[in-house]
Image (cartoon, rainbow, N blue to C red):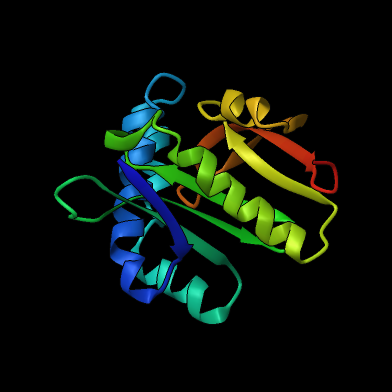
Length: 164
């Protein structure tokens, strides 16, 4: 399987929204309830994704994968805004294949190119160990409410990007 990371564009918004929901529902079930996962998915729409891209508030990347058939598929995406990793989601069909690592590298490189010394993110409990394995450090544990008013636990994390 080959992986290529590229900047996302508005034509990717539908697939990005699909992956966002599939990742939450397919990978977070051991740490979160069905109600929490449903509440997190409420605002994961193509329109919202397109809006973030058109406003320039987020820089998004997609990972395309293909094999011998040469049929390409978007397997995951990542995004950043200023010094924040806003999201990193993988289609569950492609989890644990290194796609998350290359997408994380893309947003870290983007922040480094902007001379941002420290990156920040809020991780799900599900992804916490992934980020720890990539040099991120826990800064806080927190609970926030979704737009539906459902409480969800997260982990605040940071990484010194000026250290390689």
